[in-house]
Image (tube, rainbow, N blue to C red; front, side, top):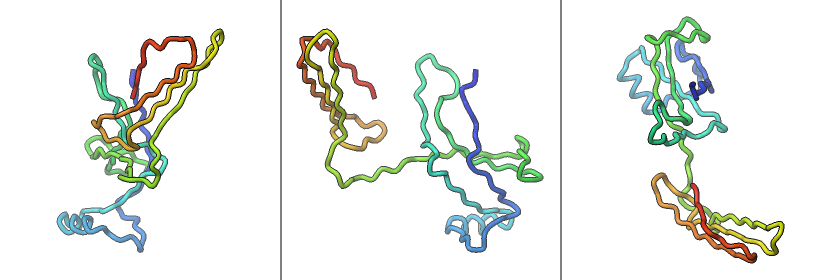
Amino acid sequence: VKFSKEMTIASTQVAPTKREKGDQLTPIQEKLVKKMGPNAFPFTFSFPEMAPCSVTLQAGENDEGKPLGVEYFVKCWVGNNEEDKGHKRSTVQLAIKKLQFAPAARAGNRLPSSLISKGFTFSSGKISLEVTLDKEIYYHGEKIGANIMITNNSRKQVRNIKVYV
């Protein structure tokens, strides 16, 4: 069983060049073309705005094989035309990650929170649970601080609370 799907989100012909006259080389492209010589073909690409960010799901202890997630590759190959997929020996690929930028500070001072209430059929009153995080943005590996407030207006007893991230 294979749990992967390969999709092409953009394709362009690099050589012979189809560059627009208004396209400018970036400083790093200029240096690379100067270093590599006349057989270097600079190009640029951009992700569609709706493309999801790169994500890798952590494998379990007994899991084997490639991890699941969203990966992106820039793949270049030599072919006779644009539709030609090339051969493995004439193909190179580079793995890249699409990251989401989060500004350090936002204008609002409101912390993320959620409130849920549960009523019971044969019992009067409700149990309300409110969770508030200590800040808006967390980075990978950072501890998440949460304030949990339970209001029990029923005759039911709260035995345990489970928190999942």
